[in-house]
Length: 323
Ligand SMILES: CC(C)(COP(=O)(O)OP(=O)(O)OC[C@H]1O[C@@H](n2cnc3c(N)ncnc32)[C@H](O)[C@@H]1OP(=O)(O)O)[C@@H](O)C(=O)NCCC(=O)NCCS
Image 1 (cartoon, rainbow, N blue to C red):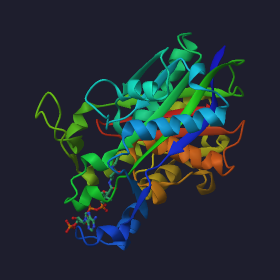
Image 2 (spheres, rainbow, N blue to C red):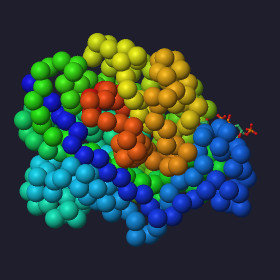
Image 3 (cartoon, helix red, strand yellow):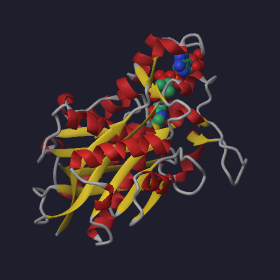
Image 4 (cartoon, rainbow, N blue to C red):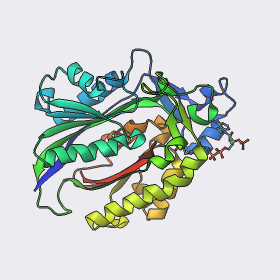
């Protein structure tokens, strides 16, 4: 059977690093509060010339270089983002043009922080359905542009950045030993809209709007939703937590990551954590964490890797990949 195999990874971060202490003169907060409640120590913030498209392009170029491929080899670009350069056209198409790619097709996918997990699952279906052989899957965000910088309960949590994967069609035996995407489980439930949303949009206010969140409510639901969808993925693949080599969760809050891993029985040393370095970069958080763990040699060919995310909507999901 056809499997969607990871051929390369890449990442891009804005030049400017903002430390927790840099918020101290802006809103009533402290490095200690932010680090203790979230595990975040710093985040990258995009300059005016750094956009979702430019960061996505840089991450895509890095992933292509890692794969030893050029844009000519790619059939499809799926970009997960909630902070597109424009309302339309899709920022994926802009990235396609920036890469000098004038064949194939590209589109954006909007599932907020779960965007990358949705995008990998979508790319896998295009590959297995025979519509594409090589897909660039990108998560790129500039959440700094939609933050209310006077709201301490949200502005300290998010950051900007991009990560990318190249997925390529390969042959598999149809077993759990195959390389590639092995199983996935996706969920959403709009009843939770008001707990995490942006209070603007083209069809309502005609403005871009700002991120609004009931943090405590999100926290309350997060661990249960994440562990449910992971257990569904384990059961679809016929594996258990002990079989995993690496758990790469959405990087929103270290306490949510720790509680989820503990509930699932995933050993602490198998959990990839980058929230301290990047903050919550929404759809970019999982591919950024992946590229860190691949670059430092933790994730290796043949490893069984579980990706997970949860975000506004709510949306949530998990994907199991043999690297
Ligand atoms: C946002 C979050 C860190 C807040 O932590 P918490 O322990 O739940 O804290 P609470 O919301 O209960 O607030 C505790 C107090 O800290 C205050 N506070 C909020 N932000 C603060 C900040 N940056 N600095 C200092 N104090 C802050 C609150 O105003 C509140 O004060 P009060 O008790 O006087 O009302 C936490 O709820 C969280 O991480 N939620 C999930 C968010 C998330 O991951 N979202 C993305 C999902 S994709």
